[in-house]
Amino acid sequence: MFNRLFAFFIISSFCTLSFASSGFIEKEMLFSKARIVLVKNNWKPTPMHTNDNWNYVGVERDLVSSNIIEVDSCAVDIALCVLFYNKNEECLKLIVKGEDIKTMKVVQWTFECPESRTLAGDGGQEYNQAKGIEEAKYLLQKHRMILLIPSSPPVEWIYQIRAKEYAKYGIEWKLVGDAPSSGYEEYQEAFNKVMSDSIVSKYGQDFFDRTEKQISLKTAEEESRRNKFSVVK
Image (tube, rainbow, N blue to C red; front, side):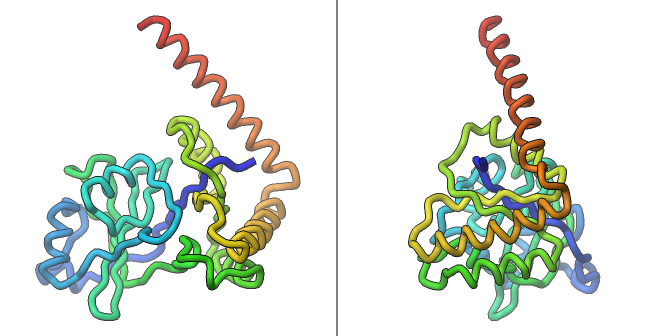
């Protein structure tokens, strides 16, 4: 049923004001400037998806193409991106807004590390069914609903329709590609089972059927519009 997974990060806390008044990054500062400030303060970009099957789309792809390897994910329905930096054993999570790198601005930052790198995949050696159940329950306690989707990159505009429809309900899609091992496949199935049960419990047994029907309708409408536009051209 699922076609594409995308992680949507919810802003949860406010930045530390003491740094804002001492030559550190500030809210509304251009991201390009903030990145320079971070590096000058010995904060190094944290490579986020070097060993997994993450497929970048939209603004994520633009950032990575510009060698901004610290991007973790960008939301679909609002122009927010999450990036991570590290210094010694500390971490910094930066949230920026905007769809153009040149005009992106800082929204806020917190001193926290990536929540669960195992979701991204690092070879499959740590993965098993119990791990999938454990991590899904942990994220649900954090009020995050995520589905791990094994899929190749879809047509961009079709993906946008699907991701936005699920984002209405606070559900994140994370594309993980094909399972690199049988252990990871078990992990993924167990993780999605816990998440799906929680989603159905919250929104009803027919949630996925209802949502997929809406996606099919919107996809058909957009395809018709695009065909008409193509004929006019």
